[in-house]
Length: 163
Image (cartoon, rainbow, N blue to C red; front, side, top):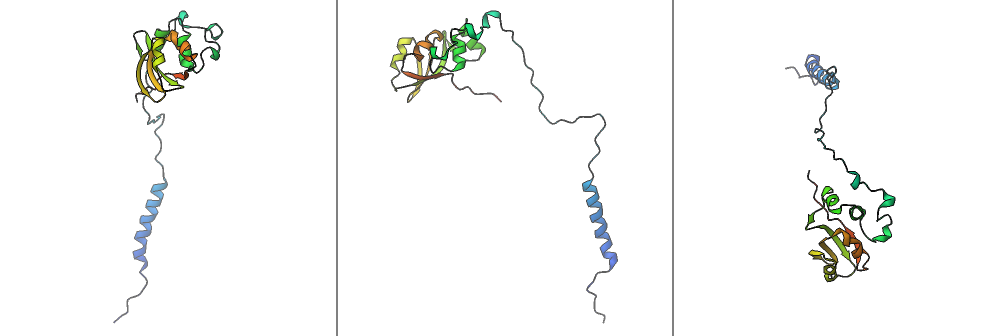
């Protein structure tokens, strides 16, 4: 009897070598791009509408009644812009600030948890958590509230952004 050889015959090694060679050259080759075709995998750009701002809504900063932040300490800049506008309710609605009965929704950070004093400013009180109070306030009264010494900040409420 013949002893089987430990080495495989060369003919058995040719097939796996050819398979490896074909796989390696095929994987390295990138497909040729089609001429004059741009492929993009991105969502479409949304359509935006434009709104013309009437001259009455355009106020130069130097003529604004709120040109100096010291006039309304702690008032958020967007609220200062609303208060300084010739038509604050229209501007608030344009900025998508909640409006109710001539008042705009704001969040006040109080120095003390007692919010009762806000009723003397014709504010409609909402929810309160500690020193933070949600309220509807007439724009003309925001600076008075800011100067009262009982409020450290007034800002717009956070709004959900649709996706």
